[in-house]
Length: 342
Image 1 (cartoon, rainbow, N blue to C red):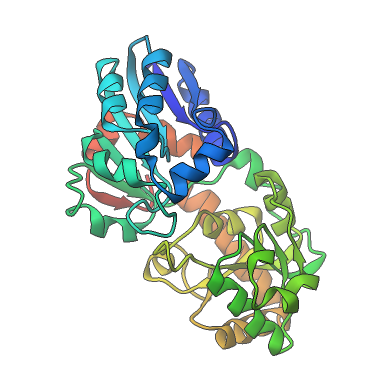
Image 2: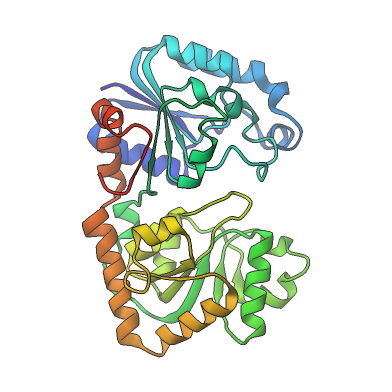
């Protein structure tokens, strides 16, 4: 099967391409990161993408000259109706992997173009169940929802503990997260934080900065960092309406214990207090973590069961997931469903 993969040449986009290539070697990568420079992207993001419609259309017309069985978009914001019409002339099927939430306003104008044409793709792939409520409004006819995949070569370090420190959070800053960790620290509960943009928090950064490493870690660095801690905190983006994130799968995959905000979706994937622990507020988070730190046998047992559930039972390993997902019969059979396990 000849596949054209459209995305950016870094992070999960690049790793997804590599995972697909193991099964489908006739795949070509089209990097969209070169369409706009940083200055123009700020206009695209904050003001309007409409100024760049012709640039986007011309990019695809110039780059796509061969026929493909499948064109796979990985969370691409640079695609308009004219460009999609061009692509459809050179493909049997078009799939859009929606790893973000284009239906809310958190990301300013980033998803303006994709919202106008999302119904025109042959298939949409979500990995948050909360996105399904927008299907009718945006006239999406065929979709599938999967749990976020992990990458075996990155996240499976040794399946065992490599413990040096107690509790970590790895992720970017959002306003509610600054307040959350301030509440923890105010009660004497310390968490090591790794991730960018925390210095934007004008209210809480001054209280937290000694606990924060502002480096934007690569996926490999994220996995290695998490693996060094007994417990890893999982927080969801409120503005993004997340009910699960990639990190919720990556943490148990590394062998560490997931302590996350509680959602119905997560509770179906990892059983509460057996395969992961959950909380609704800072006080419950502190209570759960203190119990686990004071009971190493319980903590290790839950971490091991969570790891086993992900890597041996549900098995959302990217190579396996996309081998099945890109098979047309799989998608037709599982249309408009949330698939926990293929």
